[in-house]
Amino acid sequence: MTDDIRKAFPILQETINGHPLIYMDNAATTQKPRQVIDAISRYYLHQNANVHRGVHTLSQKATDLFEASREEVRSFLNAPSTEEIIFVRGVTEGINLIAASFGRSQLNAGDEIILSGMEHHANIVPWQMLARELKFSIKVIPFNDRGELDLEAYQEAFSPRTRLVGVVHVSNVLGTVNPVKEMTAIAHEHGVPILVDGAQAIAHEKVDLQDLDCDMYVVSGHKAYAPTGIGALYVKKKHLESWPPYHGGGEMIEEVAFGKYPTFASLPYRFEAGTPHMSGVVGFAEALRFIRNTGYDVIQAHEQKLLEHGRRQLSAIPGLTFYGDAERKTSIFSFLIKGIHPLDIGSFLDARGIAVRTGHHCAQPVMQRYGIPGTARASLTIYNTTDEVDYLAESLRDLVKLFT
Ligand code: PMP
Image (tube, protein in one colour):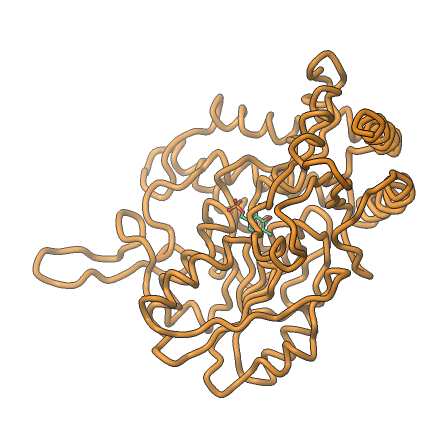
């Protein structure tokens, strides 16, 4: 099975520093299957024209493809309506859109929002920038040593001034799968909307938005086999209808004249100013078809096997400490080895063709929580193998020997 999946990813044939590429930096971005690369080529070879504008046939074809891709995203996430699916560049833009539109229009001095302590900077910084301006405050849900959120502290964080909860579905450092359905129910008991950052989720976890019932959900295509620069923001229509537009420009208006305020297009177009990333959208839809055809049962069974295998192999390395050991987690290993700087771990592995990430992973508060400057992170996905994990472990053992 894994062989067939590996064959679908041409880049896995590359050699790096004289060694076969072992790509374990999937939380940063995944590789792309041939069908996604082909869909993008096909788009430029046969289908390219600007969407929503032309009467000409090619433009209509491109528009149909673009809107069919939106429907693919809707059905993949089981969102109620395509009116609630806004194409954005990724999670960063999606959250900035929420902050600029909802945040700026509905948050006031003295209000509060709740964020988890394991957020990526993308779900911290936009709120901190706005909080300074509007003078609302940010409460933080702590997490335990294993990397699990403290749900009691979460419950206690609500006050009559709470206006929003923001939580990451799957932590990009710890791999923790947060109980976002339960957290949504709790937020709703307090009448508060909840935003879920799904950047690390959709490659690994089935997301059913009607079941989750969260108010906003945002994804980056490139972390789930799609190209960079494309993602989707889901917002419940009941919220979106009252939000002011984010970017102004072409495509998002109904009528523009000098001397009066413009009127805006219907949903979701009101939130999609300018020419969109059309080939990206097409590639995104194809990547979702790849996940759908592979099946989450297959994906999860494989990745959980990698997780178990990796835990066993890596925990035998002298001096290695894991960060993130939640009951429910994806196949991410964040670790440090006593006496060895994470950068040295990364460079040593790179020389053997193994790509891992080192540093704070854009989640500095997580590092502060553990009192560490950073970690080495091996993030595995559907095309990684237990043999690769063995080679990682063997290489780390060699590294430890070198240092002792
Ligand atoms: N949230 C999480 C949990 C992430 O892992 C990332 C990417 N590292 C982001 C947000 C930001 O995503 P993007 O860079 O695609 O906007």
